[in-house]
Length: 440
Image 1 (tube, rainbow, N blue to C red):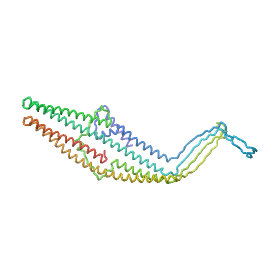
Image 2 (image 1 turned 45 degrees about the horizontal axis):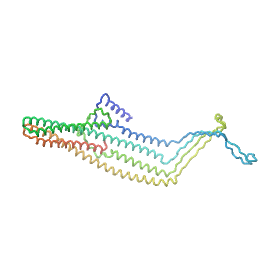
Image 3 (image 1 turned 90 degrees about the vertical axis):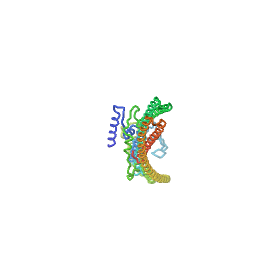
Image 4 (image 1 turned 30 degrees about the horizontal axis):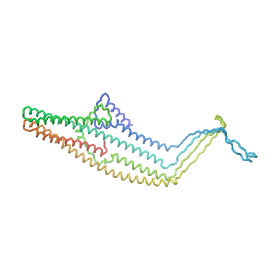
């Protein structure tokens, strides 16, 4: 009931999101939810759960008795004669006599019930385990899709930052060019420096256009990942600032490693191997079944089914005990195989648990380091803006050559690049951290 209510609420959200507008505003959480709702590969993967549920129902139905109905009609155009030896039935010589009826019709009900069949309930347990495994695989697939969407979302923010910085660079070089043009017209600047200022400005404009194209491509990629029409305008409501402020390191004492789908799948696979071993051992046991048959047999010269004289019931019941003999010999290797698989899954589980613990520690360290580096790079970037203003004023007053101004610009560009790199490292560390702790 809760699942149905959630789907209804999400459908209302989905409809209201796109109704009467071609513009959508999405937080990163809404973007991942929308992608999970829209993506065809996600819908395809979810059908594996339905298949596993169907297999579970089918295994439970094996507990039901087998009941079948059949009908058979045999008509002899000419009855086959039987040889009656001499001395029988008062015959002094052997005779050929056609005994029987041309029409033999039978309607039967057959019932077979397995009183005890080794592994029957184990098959149900295996089917339940497979269903749990498919659910966990589906959860892992959804998490992978969420990571893809989050990476695409972060990439839009990064490309937007690069575009903003490129426009700032263009504005600076435009200011240099205007100042250089004025000084050149007044005879205070040589022609080569004036031309250099013009070239730098044009290169900055070209770089701005390039970053704009990259920004638009990143938006297009995000639309593809969440499967919304290209003509829609997507506005991101989360920013780099909100992400910097929302970082939270979880308490490792809460055993966050248990959230990882890889470990959950290995636990389920281990349980599945144990069930398969149990089933293999049950193959040594005998099986007992009951069977019964109820038949109404018609034997008459023609097709006069209304004549009750030609109808007769034929009924029987029985029991069957099956004891495996050569099958037990063949089953030895199967038992040994699943023992090996259990040992193998145990080793894999221990190794993967160690890997996860290391990934969590590494992710936490990288997130903390990237956060510090981002803070330093951001402060340096802010400081570089102040340096730029001072140097521009000095150049405007004629106390600073254009060549030295370009040296300052190189330092400013390096600071900008460090800031962009720090933002990129922070976003990657944030994704890896959420992935490591299994919360996405």
